[in-house]
Image (cartoon, rainbow, N blue to C red; front, side, top):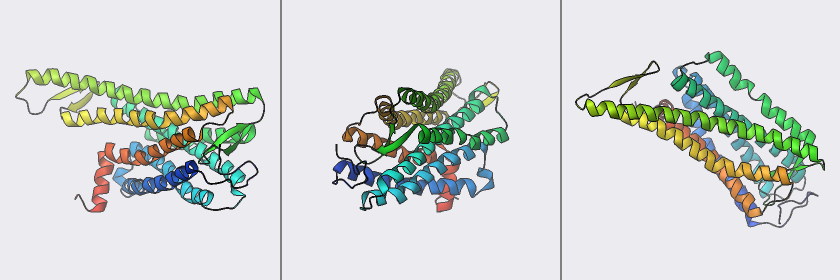
Length: 317
């Protein structure tokens, strides 16, 4: 094991894992900020774009921006300087920020999925004011978890030096309690988000099946309209297929990038042992891939945001 800093705060020899992790944080932050800035400009640059759905999306993007800005400030200093005070104190701060951003991102994604599920499938939507209140009130849980981190344990540098992991006081009950707390805070929103999006995907799958059966008996009809739970759906095959595909794509990216990272973190909490520097580096790079893909997927799946960005760039009138 060759951490970037030891527990005393003394700089350790350079390791290729630390170099990869540090460079990945910086470049991913830059690649995250550029599309995120366009998304926020599209949403807040026009009053017509400030819908409940887009405001929830904007919070997800803002969280990505906060974390990206922090990476640009913190990681270049950490990896390319020899100041000894950075190891312990800055790792505590970085760990708190990353924990709050990660959990708030999960809650925002779950809230967005729930809003779309209500709008598309159940057709029983809450008022926009309640949704916006939930949107900004959800920050309380991550801050509570972050506070419990400060009380129950501490952050330390992971084997690669690229991220901070949790190191606990020698108390089995504390370790078990924090393990359960983190499982609920991360796995709960994760599976709820996947459930809502899979339900939406299944709903559109049924609609597509209905369209296939109807279109086979009305081959001369150029435009067929079906009524599903009071929702009029135009038989534009491309649009319906795209919605289902986007939902599946979201779940795939989420599972691919977040689950390995979360699994490594849970193992840290459950076992309280150091992980392989290679495993740590791969896990960090996966979550950074998600940070980069998140705003790009948002632009791809939301046609109104995409069109507004095109207008800003002068590509579309």
